[in-house]
Image 1 (tube, one colour):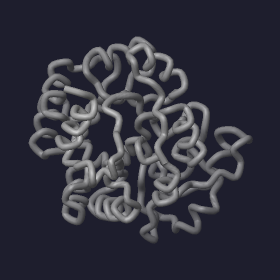
Image 2 (cartoon, rainbow, N blue to C red):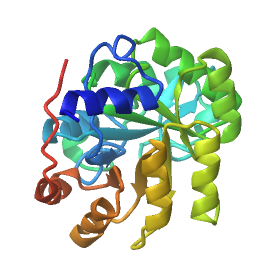
Image 3 (cartoon, rainbow, N blue to C red):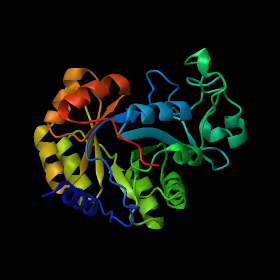
Image 4 (spheres, rainbow, N blue to C red):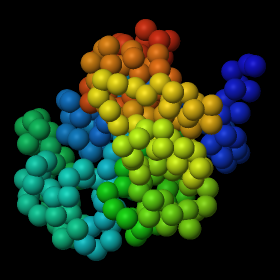
Length: 273
């Protein structure tokens, strides 16, 4: 089986045909930059994403929430207190209020003036061949709104929703072939995997530190589900994940992790505009 045929087979298993994917070759394994290059740049911001792209991340994870007036913005916490110079819950702030906040200076004065991006602004800066791991911090309304924006932006081939069941159901109601990462985690990893396969989700995000459920990963690999793993950043943790069949470890320090990836023949992603 040649490399091109293998890629086509994987895309079809994900429900993505080559024309729908704009003939973009998507990675089958690599590194996921958690909230961008968050160890050295302000998390969930454009500079953090651009640094992750520069280093060659194969997937970039970020968090999406709805503001009081229904805008989609990127923020991990329910409130802006930890990462910005403001206070309050995203759900209680308007987009205009969110956009006045500084999301960089708390990390480093060099990033003073960095703003919280909207979902649309973030999508616009990503290459078309990096997976976009959109972690939804909300339910049905957020799922529907995010799916609509992904289609409008022409990113359906690469953006997937890491979502709970209600958000995933709402997203699929408006965009039936939207890519889904099942986040309805269960204590039993095998049950979690079986549920993910049954709901025809294309991704799963296993949760653990220092242990990989090898039999569970084998089942997911056989079913064509791409396996993300959160999280075990040290070199031996990364090596264990790839040896065990994990596709995309989530890492906080993408630059350091890339050196380990190359031991497994995983090269930095060359971006495709």
